[in-house]
Amino acid sequence: MKLVIVTAVEAFHKEVTALFKKAEIENFSESDIDGHKNSAAVLVASNWFSAEKSSNESTMFFSFTEEENIDVLFSLIKEFNQNLETNSPLKAVVVPIERFI
Image (cartoon, rainbow, N blue to C red; front, side):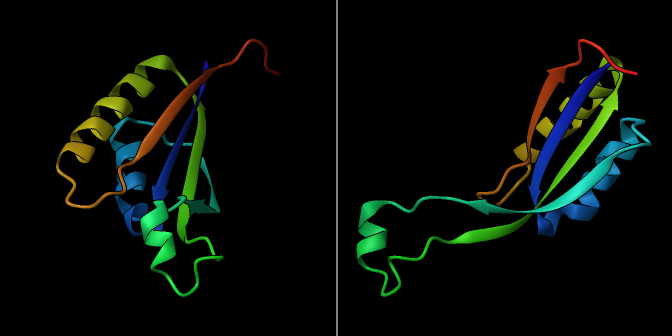
């Protein structure tokens, strides 16, 4: 068993849920998060509100599941990201679980 974590901008909420379902990961949790990206110095200098950092409404999905399901999910995410026309790809990581009850 492993822990898979996926982050996505809020606009992709339905798509990520569908990817989990296609990967046969039926049990997962989600949490709203704010994603932050530091702007390049030139962009910050030209912004009247340069002291403010921009953030995006995002969602973090996570599930304790089997490696086979994660392999399918990663393939689906890779395909999804290749067809994106935005600069906000889905991000995913896997964390091994040493012990659980």
